Length: 450
Ligand SMILES: *[C@@H]1O[C@H](CO)[C@@H](O)[C@H](O)[C@H]1NC(C)=O
Ligand SMILES: *[C@@H]1O[C@H](CO)[C@@H](O)[C@H](O)[C@H]1NC(C)=O
Image (cartoon, rainbow, N blue to C red; front, side, top):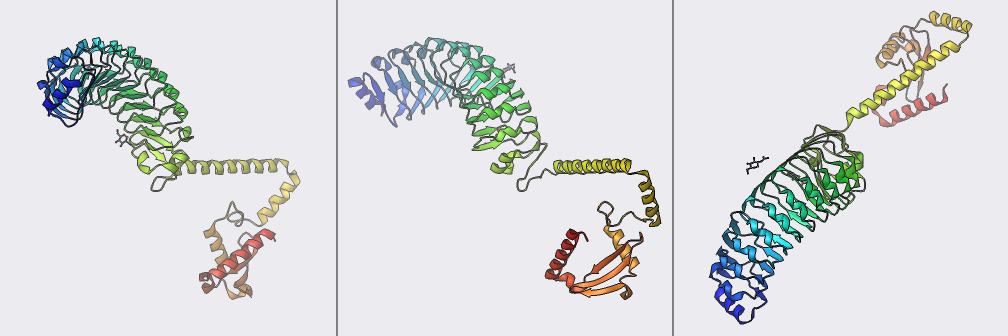
């Protein structure tokens, strides 16, 4: 019980108080008796009630840790008299009310954690005077209004978490001055407007979370300067424009979440270069085009779902048919153009006389449907009809021999050409080995150009 602890403290606890699983009202403490205490560590207990005004008598305390209790009410103004404090943790309680503006007296603070409470009102601009802060955690409160510009003086900050509040307005570009930041979280607020390009100066950042806000505008190209970045979460905003190619500079990136935005255009192929993704999420955007090969290889399809038109060689995913068709059409039209050009050249170069002779012989064997067996004119149905017609449906009188697999017929086609035809017997057609040797024969014949 607290009573026992106090007894111990009064005996010898001039420097340190630390207890586990204590319960009772914090206000029962006679704080005035412990004015020589430097460290108060009462976290993870079951202390309840308000933080008493008498806490202001602990003027020598450097370290005050009251997190994970059931403390309620507001933070007493008297706490601002503890000017020696370097460490203040009141997180995970039920504290309400606003942050006292007189907090500006705690200029020695380098750790301030008020997360997981019910604090409301604005973040006082006086916070800008706590210039020794390296860790500021206001996560999960009900803080509203805008982020004060004055925060830019906290240049020692390495950890800044303002997430899970109801902060609104734009993100101050002054935040770009906090060059020592490694962890920066503004997620789950109501922040709007652009991501300041000054964020490109935060070159020590390892984690940047701006997700679940109302941020719009593009992803600034300067984000490519954040070369140590491992986690980048911009999901659930209204961010538009293309994914900047500069993102390829983020060689350490492992978690990228850009889902639920309005990003458009193609995924830059360089996005995949040198990457080792733990997770990537580009779903719910307006992206289109090819999914870069390495991304396809590494990612489950859910990562790309609900976009305009992304395609790739992923299982159960639309393949890039459109693109292939275009290439095919391109190749064919290129070939056709070449052929026409070639024919035209040939026509120009041929001596006139020869042309005349050719013309005559051609008209003699008036071709009904062009040259049936040239690749250009080949039409299976027409060829078959002509063959049936000219052999009178393979009449025996046209048969010139019976081979190992099929009979050979002589046929004069309507264009005057005489050809030899080999017709498979019905049962041979069903037999794979016969079909195979037939194909081999056809192949050899076509190669010897006889
Ligand atoms: C921000 O929220 C406050 C209420 O908390 C409101 O009065 C103010 O107009 C809002 N500002 C913007 C820019 O939305
Ligand atoms: C990305 O963010 C969205 C929305 O904020 C979330 O639903 C999704 O689970 C996240 N994806 C990953 C891979 O964490």
